Amino acid sequence: MSAAYSVLVVRWIDGATETLKSIPKQSSVLDLKKLISGKSGIRAEDQRLLYLGTTLENSKTLRSYDIKDYSTVNIVAAVSAPQSPEAAEPNHAAVALKTLFFKGFNGETLALHDVPSTLPIEDLRNRIKEHARLNPDGLRMLWGGKELQDGKTLETYGIQQDNTLHLVYKLHGGLS
Image 1 (tube, one colour):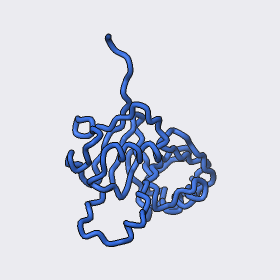
Image 2 (cartoon, rainbow, N blue to C red):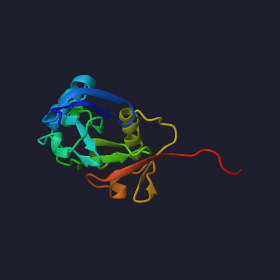
Image 3 (cartoon, rainbow, N blue to C red):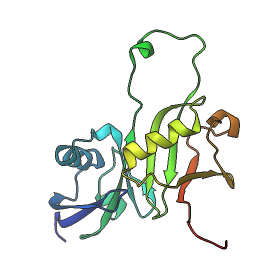
Image 4 (cartoon, one colour):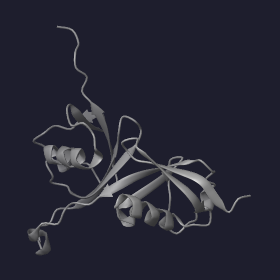
């Protein structure tokens, strides 16, 4: 049995891949994240790695997940909200901040951190467009079987911490 992976493939939410070579099997998940960080510029703490639908924990080794040579590990860049100058001042009427997950039409997942519960849906859509490298034309968000409407907030829909929303595109055409 080899002590290192000949090839390990990392796949981004947009389908792009990065081939990594000679990764020791005893490397921790955090070690892999640091390697990815050096190549992508995304901090290790802002990455979520998935293998066969399981989120990989930083303290575990790659071997502990029974990852095989030439396997694909999916990466979700967990995006934090930019800090405004007002955010540095304490706000006693602060709104709850959430981490939300978005499942794309291709099955990939995006995580957004520090999302205020009072964020308007149109602003949430803009954050997704900025960070997911998705075509914004016709992008819809679904949760609980409903399409989220502009002018409303996450609070309006009762969306909670760690909920998963679905991203789909509007289909054009139909009967006239």
